[in-house]
Image (tube, rainbow, N blue to C red; front, top):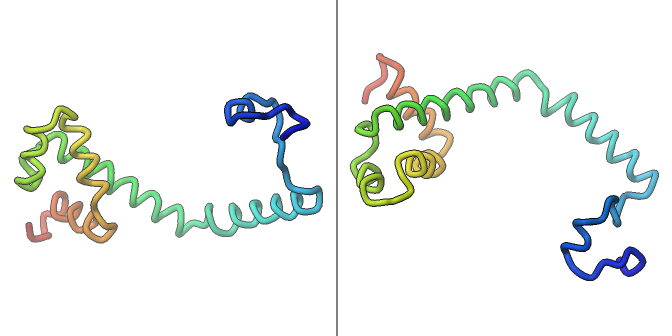
Length: 117
């Protein structure tokens, strides 16, 4: 850091290159690990399917609640009325507070005609 003339965090951010990096051998091992993870984990078809489902659920919940805020619980509807943040922010916060299981159940309640409300 001294050799690069870094005295502040902003100085560090302005540098055109990384000051701290992996050694050559470790850098190659890190690249190999990343390739392995992308090939065998991140892009695994089951992971991709679940990510796609999660995306569909979150978008579906957001759309339903923004288009019909009356479907929100009464306490959340009050937040919409009382807060300057507006409907979109309150809906985002409401969804962000859901567990995966609850979000999935809410999605089914909203979109599956066979599911009990």
